[in-house]
Length: 448
Ligand SMILES: Cc1cc2nc3c(=O)[nH]c(=O)nc-3n(C[C@H](O)[C@H](O)[C@H](O)COP(=O)(O)OP(=O)(O)OC[C@H]3O[C@@H](n4cnc5c(N)ncnc54)[C@H](O)[C@@H]3O)c2cc1C
Image (cartoon, rainbow, N blue to C red; front, side, top):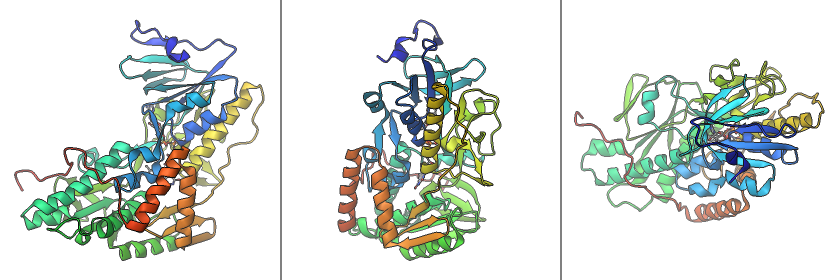
């Protein structure tokens, strides 16, 4: 049992885990994503007790989630157990728990480990790295029909929905229902929407070819909708144009400047037109987790905490926010919500705390080093934008593949993903085409 839990008193409804002996400070990190893990790693030699809390027992490599959703990879290939940090780092305790409260004034958080009840955990330093979740822009009722893509369960649910839709198309005798089943609508043309649409286009044309006698999957209709004027709005306009052309070539219908008004069991209503679809996927907005708001600091419209240039929460000594949960303006521009930014912020704060623990002061504020933005658009094609540099095509795609293989957590994941990609590249096959029971296809109600 970890020292942390050994100190809890289960007979109390809200046991307080006392701060450690005062000569050893406790750093509590909430979130085992890119930012939280980078912060923990940077503290590996610090004379502190590091407690890393996550409600999941695994870290997810989110940039490849869309490949799980489209059956290229299986969930275990893009995830790694957070607990293994305890084997690598002597000063860390990993706690599987949902954090439900933060009290900055008393220096405690409330966490609920499964089956144990609420625990109060005292901290000397707090690092909030809780990331983002899908936002339906005030229409949470859409979530039932249009899943977002944020974790492994979402990816598996989307995969089941897509594969289930083809099964429905192959079995129904109703032509309108078949057309509805073979129409896929993605709402949001940012990197996730673009990557997912392109991968789906390839799957229907290549992977599913010949798999159904009654339908031709290649005739599926894939529609990418966005309320904005162009795909990939965070990239340069020229890149957006290349990508839109590429998507069209792959068979994706790109519709921009159209707002989605309704999502229901029949499909979507966008720009006043109903599009019947059994598979609507939400790849649009994101919002921060509720934790930054609990810090009593200012937040932006998406709920991200506004932090100072040292990523500290103003007026809350020893409290930091990093990764997607933080809103940071640098040189007049917001630091983007990408993995590299999260890693750099987490590492910066980990090092800052380690220095403070040694009695040294950090003078240099956080500075984001932009390594560039990439998106992959189907087989053999990716785009890269870094400052004035913009590249596209096969070589960029190779760079994308290389960078992603190297960035995956755990050597075995790198080897497994490489093998899957090679198999898929040369055969067009995808190994993870599983539908967990029952298929999650939205079927119309009796009034249809
Ligand atoms: C589908 C998708 C594709 C993406 N593609 C790319 C890409 O190609 N390139 C790129 O650079 N970036 C990409 N991103 C963005 C990138 O993944 C994020 O910027 C990055 O994950 C942010 O890291 P983080 O540590 O701040 O948050 P996360 O990685 O989201 O980690 C947050 C962690 O906090 C935990 N948590 C949250 N709330 C609580 C709580 N109350 N209690 C306990 N634990 C909690 C969560 O379980 C999670 O493990 C993508 C994101 C998504 C969703």
